[in-house]
Image (cartoon, rainbow, N blue to C red; front, side, top):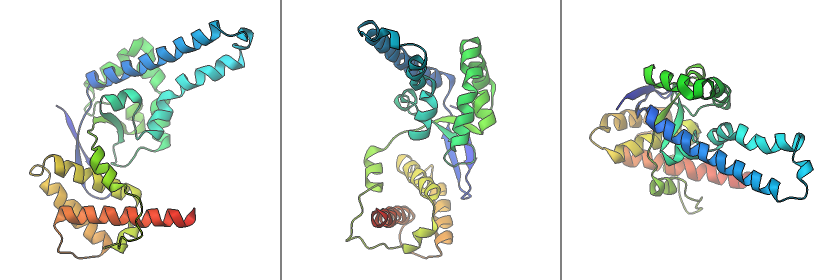
Length: 245
């Protein structure tokens, strides 16, 4: 399987498995079935309502909006995934290692007309197949690509624990980190848990970089240290949000 190495802004290199044409096509077909289900539902409502005359003009435009903006809104609010992508365990990422910006998602969405609709998707299929980073035209212009990902529900639940007033942060310096830094650490931990030997070097680099940013020293093992950092970060940010509320 094709992979891509991305140098993040935190100077940590992450390796992703690229989503191939098959994965992306299946995700697209799943989303297409949702479009069809939505359209059939609208048709049923239109045929059984006494307000049929009102299902035209402005009303019709409003009803088409969910389909028109479906991909854009899903990717913005579902971490780079549509429902089809989530089912296939693939998502959009930025080539700089950060979460794609709204502008990047917007560019991908705008050029979907060229990629998916012209030639019934032939342009997108050819582009993904031939490009080194499995990108369609919209990806190339937005600086994104689509990769495979595996969810880890149990681990994510432990990372996003509710704020506990009894918890004493070990590393209060975590306030120097940003959300994207913590997300990168989460990805490193997920990879280490899935294949410790393969990603040991990545773990050590992430640990060394985090120690340097926080300006601390510790006797904790690398994995324990990163997990402690994430717990402290979630605790402190949760408490701050509670105070603001």
